[in-house]
Length: 366
Ligand SMILES: *Cc1c(COP(=O)(O)O)cnc(C)c1O
Image (cartoon, rainbow, N blue to C red; front, side, top):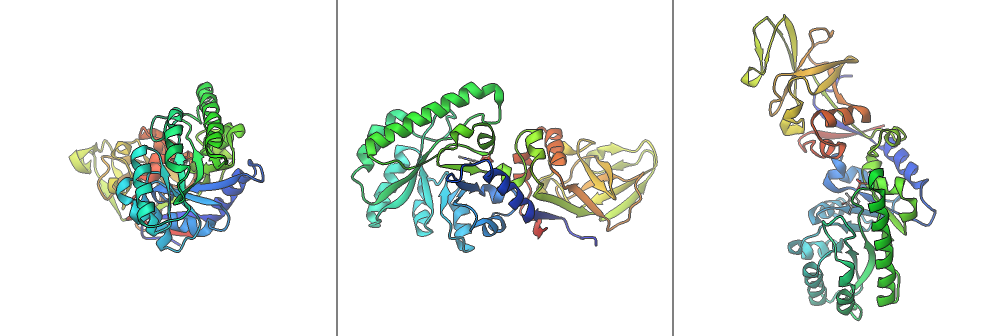
């Protein structure tokens, strides 16, 4: 049956498969946090979180409002907010979200808020910078952190964590191992200062696969859940979760010398049949995929984008494809195509997936 609107399909059986694939890489006692930031890597954070809420220990989002959306949808699982921002801390507490506190500015703001609200043992997480140089305290700041938190009863440090800069890159393994050692030292110092050991975590998807010695007490699974592992052989072991489908709105027969699309991006050098598809750069199809760089599949045949990508539409060459208006168009339904489209638009799977616009309807399939 043809679907007459562009839609993104989420395969929850593939989600389960990928989850179990990564669980099998962990020790039994290692906890699993699933990252659902950026609308679940462009899928649907609420659909993913509802499906996984009883199968994982934690969710993480980037920003506070993303966590609020999950709470509003009824998700009760602990949610770590990786980049909560001072302005949103009150909202964060209202929705029982757990902040990553990564600098003295935000730590002080949170302590002040916790005191003013008479909070007791509110769970917080401290991030340490071991070399990514993005967010996080330096190890040398531990004594100052201790002085602020040790006798503080309004908050409790649930976890300390760090993030690898190049976990997918074997050529940078020395750097990753250095980061792992630095984090181990921070964990030991923390325990010496505070007298207890919080949950420790460091690994993202590629960290889970490449640095089993750094799983610590919990891992943070992101892109892997959605079927990608930054390396072909590893991605091949996973199942595809996200597929993007559309349909043919109209077919034009054009003659030699006729042009297609804005700025006459394509000028026909033969008689052609051109199909218009209702998905454009506002939907996440980068303009760099225009003029033969991007492609779709129609009736099991591959064909390329002609001319420029418009805001709401693309045109593709169907001269040699038997097809009709209303026929299904597959933008991608496997990881290899996503990787290829990402490569052809000079980006990575993460960006291609998260760019898929919210105006495209999400559906669950199996
Ligand atoms: C996004 C993110 C992750 C997940 O990374 P993947 O490579 O998608 O697995 C883990 N930790 C932090 C801090 C992140 O920002």
